[in-house]
Length: 217
Image 1: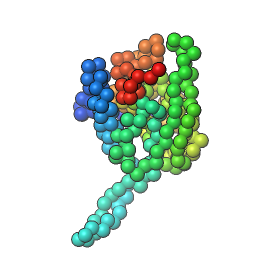
Image 2: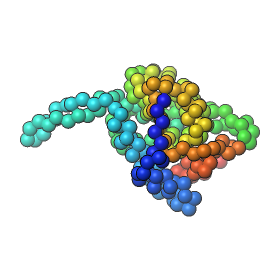
Image 3: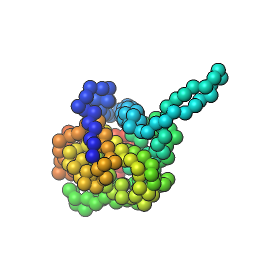
Image 4: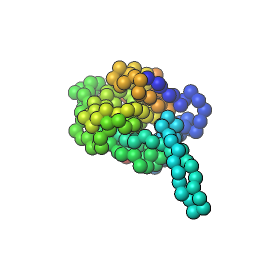
């Protein structure tokens, strides 16, 4: 399984991540959402380089031009609700893609233990398609695992791209044991070292869903 960590190279993605992390800047919800969208757009562009292309003829007002465009049938999948704003960035680039939505959330059994609960799935068929799963925070990998198993009810994708803003090595190791190694690529804006006792990423950025859309009861 290939792991792409954008934090190891210099690009504007690092600036967007820095603003998402900054506890003073992140109080501006609109700016938080915009930075998440911009990271999604940047990742979508990079992922687009891995698609399969062929030449097509385009008729212009003055003649015919040959343009190489993607052949992949793409499905964008996100995990509600934190993934919505990140998903938007991908949809801005993959504007003709099918869209899938999975509600996978933590149901705590005590202060530190939880189960992943899935109550909703809306998706087109994914058999033979390129599946891009977006989740801004890849903490333990359990939500991603649950999402993937739910999506398999819709078929078997030809290629899988997992996109995350901040991941942990623990989560990457976990999903490496779940997803097909030869056809899966993981894209991360940063990989953080650890989790706290509540399984939140440290240093992380906090609760992405709350920062984007407001606190929940």
